[in-house]
Length: 244
Image (tube, rainbow, N blue to C red):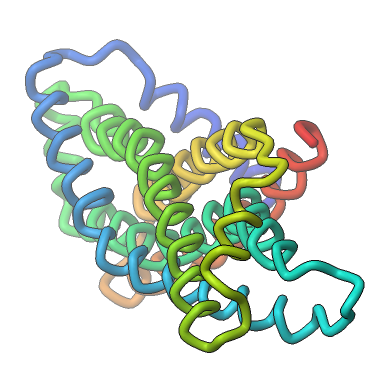
């Protein structure tokens, strides 16, 4: 995304956040998008978070071979890694692939079939009508999915660690409850909010300015996912640098 594209992206966002014509229509669309983004992604996030937590615990246990380091450290490292980095970032990258491609394809198809032109002829603010519900649903549901992923990742670590014998249940629970800093959850939720905005707005921009036919829509979807993932990693670094 060069500076020209970034300028078009900012102008599109300005049009998106213009005062809506009819709040009731937007409200219905927001709930539909919440269902698609939040409820529709629960299964995928559950599987990924649980396995990441289990694998993390086994890897940490494998690396902590010293007798001088208590095994309770396994629980605390898994907890902090899951909350600060793995749950928000891995979840966002997976959601960028699932949700981002769907949003870009949907809006891109509407653009090439001239449905967006028809909305504009009727005097409807098409960026607001098509994109605002998606962004609001994204910044609401992605943080909730990240909280869900945190719980499952730590639970997955407990299951993986205890089943493999790498750590005892008592040691793991002591590890995750010792020296817990609630601020880490705040940092994680700020990341999730930013990621939710990126996951919905960048693919919407790519879809909104598609020109051509089915091939260009597919290319825009691929581009949307790639740019979203790069933006997520860049913002992850910036937010971590600012807040920690």
